[in-house]
Length: 358
Image 1 (cartoon, rainbow, N blue to C red):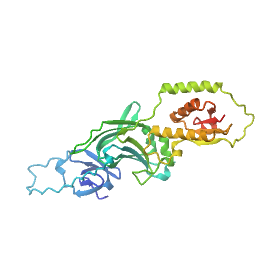
Image 2: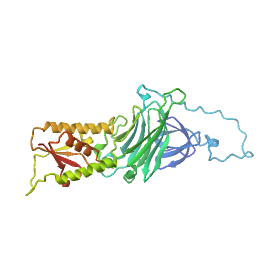
Image 3: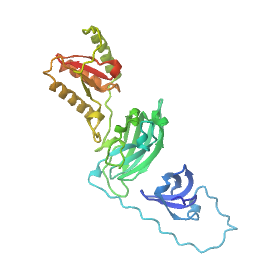
Image 4: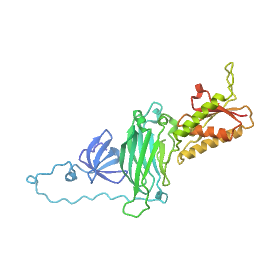
């Protein structure tokens, strides 16, 4: 498609629409002006030329009007046939909204060093979506991409480097669903905020097999079965109360005197990070993942309940402290007879708890 030039009339290969090429954006994108006068970014490889630079020159807002005195008298041209609008193929499952964001590394082999990344918006439904993709900076939101996406379609939003990861810690997607020229069920306007763990972008195993791409990707659900995704949050007051209570308990708990350092091969390590327990988390909410981690916690304690003196280190990570707080609650209620404490800071930092079977 390298023969595309400014002024060419093009149509899109992977979506409905097209227009006149007005300028180039980088080495692989062009800005296409549609029939309403809006400029839409598109990948060059997804455009096909359907007319030369003489097409639609008078419909452009930027084109000067020809001089009446100098205009030659010509026979009216027959209008060119317009490409037919593709008929939307609907599915029974598509009557419910399933919307996702996906992040793919440009160079998968260089994820550890900080590859560039691509962002895609996935509309797995029978509805058109008018949407706005944003990130938060300080106390304000900045729109990164907005537009309309067709039913059962995924579109490219942007490319960014590792230096842009910090801007993606808090993101938001707002959307309105509708159908064209047919009746449909009313869907509420949706606004979903998500917190992205940007450290995962440097971990190869966090990009996983999925239903939408041939390549491994991180897929974040925005809406599933018409239900907007919600984060599992703990209030600051509850977190502060739990931390203060733990300080008092740790101070009063019996402390073992260690006279010389020795390795203890009997200590069992159990990594409760969800990426270590499951190969694929697609379709799971934050609450689902937390419940799965707690089930694994209970399963391990039940297995070693008869091993008096057994030490088990549960690696839960620091994060937002949700899993840690849930584990401590279980130890205080269901396992009061067991002794627990923070695991070795040198080995695990603040991200692990050691339980001793009593």
